[in-house]
Length: 320
Image 1 (cartoon, one colour):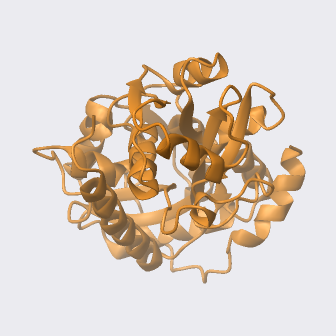
Image 2: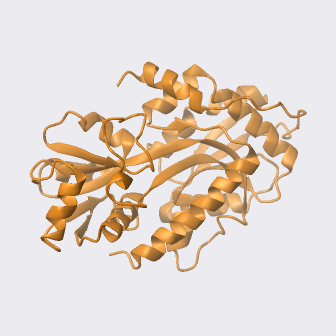
């Protein structure tokens, strides 16, 4: 895919037309953007795609800090307990809600403990199948699986991961039975499907795009409600399985009670960055469709996602 062309086509999705609020002082301190996962992951790459420009716009240093552990809960909980002064943010995604929903004793409340600051964009996932299966379309995969309950399997990057939850939700809505095979990473799970040992898996779109022309694998559906701008030729899973949707938002959250003026200042600068062709190209390289929202609209998105993920977790039941 021509990343520059993708960036240009997605620029219309980013709305930078927000009125600039009155300047609000963040105290001149270093702003910490906490990534609650290990270095090298997609979340960190995204955070680093705009942090230096954000710092320049705000007039103070911004650093990205990895605080991994417990599926993102440790780093996220640390931000919930930080001073609400705008100098500590968490780079969150939909897993922010999922981790809390799956935990028996959540270390943070994903809604009450945070203030929505700025949405960065959305990312869909892709259901991929081994070409060893006699299924060239999603409808054929569903029919094949229904005729062989428990005979097919799906790989995932680990128990309780987004890939696991997305596939478990798909099998539930499609009315099929498949065996879950967890791996330590998305790459390991993908390699097993490429080798034909595992049958299907769901991965972020950026992990699927390189295989669009690979004969060892077939891209059967994207998990967004509608087709993706990154893979327009691939149908949405919802076209075959009514009601199915599974995608992730990315954005900055602050501790609850952070002053509104500080939130609005950061939000306004992020909105400007999401109209910057350089930033758009970096996001496109990670399969993210930019989406600048007001703090109020982003808070609504997070709340709606929490309700949607609660529905998914309830539908799936105990993950196995």
